[in-house]
Length: 263
Image 1 (cartoon, one colour):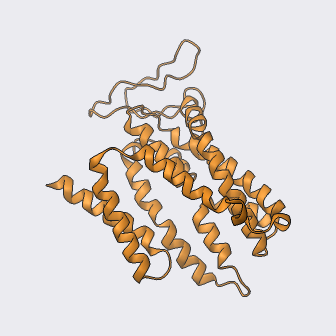
Image 2 (image 1 turned 90 degrees about the vertical axis):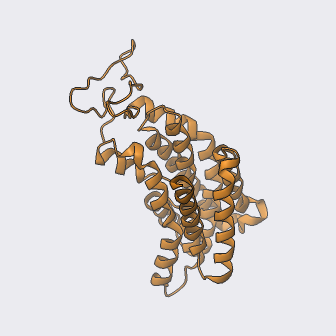
């Protein structure tokens, strides 16, 4: 994925500007169709990385807990690290290692993690209005590094009108580096420290999501879909097995928003 200084997605007849220091200008006038210009530059990647770094460090605490749990489940440091580097889905990875046994229940693990990660289809769709204006390699390449935390930051950034299409990639790199590095630390120390819950590391993810929820709060209009998602998820968790309540809560909130805005 090229990200040189002039690496900006342009339509026919568009020209890329540069600032005085030679960097590609990451702000553009509105497109002909009235939508803001979406660019893909190193400046956007850098902004995303720096903005996400404090959150990524918090995710690292959760990564340490995963590394410890992975070692307790019988994975080696290399296996746990490879899993984090290629999967990058904290909740799904923890559920997978909790279900780890001999013989490995492959079908159960696949279906459970699928139920957990289906929410990413909704999250990716929410970014569609901006990412669809980038090339497939840039948009899909960025989505490979999407997690809950950097999705929330990217949504806030793009809704602000900055047009930084590379912001998601920058935040994803920050998340990936901290997640994989923390997994190595947790897996290496897992045989010595024992249960991560006794150090409060199991609460790190909950704390991160509370902070993200505060950032996404937009006042009273946000209350209705949040309450619908909460009620649906609680009911689904009570009556359905597995982690389907995550997806159902998201679908219910999305349906409510569609109905409200179509009126």
